[in-house]
Length: 379
Ligand code: GDP
Ligand code: MN
Image 1 (tube, helix red, strand yellow):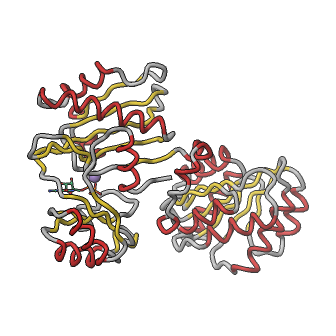
Image 2: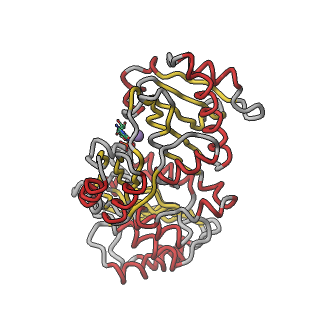
Image 3: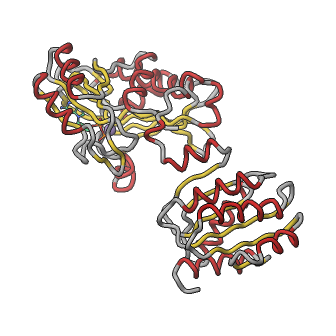
């Protein structure tokens, strides 16, 4: 689960990270009022859960309340990478000398959190990592010791920070790491952390991605979830207890079990196709859940074929078949469908689907090939 910039920065502030003064508005008038209260030039920032808002025109400076109101009027309702702006953050504008990147992520290779920093902040760090990886300074954090003060100083020197800022930088790095651990985040990032004209450090942007598996420990963070911002299919999936991740291919996949779902996507790729989604309907799925899953898959206009890959252990193939039939009655898909059903009650499952106008097979290889060909319009 991603948090908005304003939510992330408020959390960082609780851990001692300096952030600009500001507040959130949902109307231009509110934005103007916040600017008037701050009594200084402000920056109006669209609150949508994507990066690169600046480049997309979703971040603009305003000198006075009237301008703040006018610009908020332009940004509210704007479409940024497919997301509609419903909120803006009105922050006291920072006067920026230098933009630094500072972030903490889980490094799967070392099984530790790693802190990364770069003097080339502001822009997307993925780009820096690709073009000039030597410009990113990294330290690996021992989970029992936490971020050591010497490591924080090492990073500061590593990115060539002025000596007099090293102390406050180390405190910010500590705060960021504690926020990362304290919220069970998988990513906590300040980009940019700026050096202001007043020669102070300030977190101008903030981003936290929470580990969904840790969310049960943080009901206060769960409440920050912005349903407006989730892909509707993902909200729907959570409601039905399904694990769904939208991808950009065209073969819709319905699979029971996360491992089998991963393998299914690999096999689709192997035969030159591209999965439209990851979807795990879980063990023991009943008909209504299968129907919900199929509705979700078919709500994606990119889907050109659907592959069901069901290995019936706890899940019964006949139950899945009934679910598919229920869903077909409701949604009347016009894309070809392929089903691979094996395991408990597979005969019964295949018998039920015999009249459903879908290709059935027991071989995953064959099923994947059929689904990929169908998505290309070849079958
Ligand atoms: P992002 O594009 O979604 O990452 O949004 P950011 O909050 O990082 O803003 C993008 C860029 O806008 C920053 O890198 C800055 O260059 C600029 N910016 C953001 N806030 C301010 C501000 O308060 N003052 C000034 N002068 N520029 C800002
Ligand atoms: Mn940013």
